[in-house]
Length: 66
Image 1: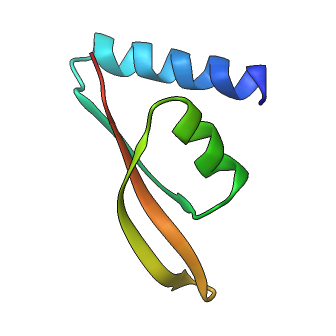
Image 2: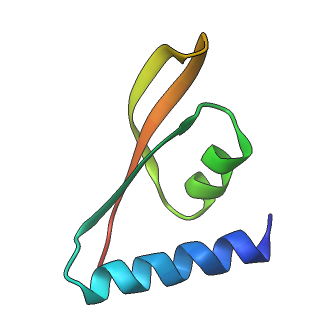
């Protein structure tokens, strides 16, 4: 786990909440390091896009912010 990635996600979520955003979304490669980092941060898979780009699977992830 990268502390830099964790710090960036935390800052992003703080800024989004400050601006009254209630949900954060991303489209990332399934089973990639980014998907793992987002899962650790509390993001959940909302949808799977099979063979979406270059025959690779991608997932839509979402997290409701406080």
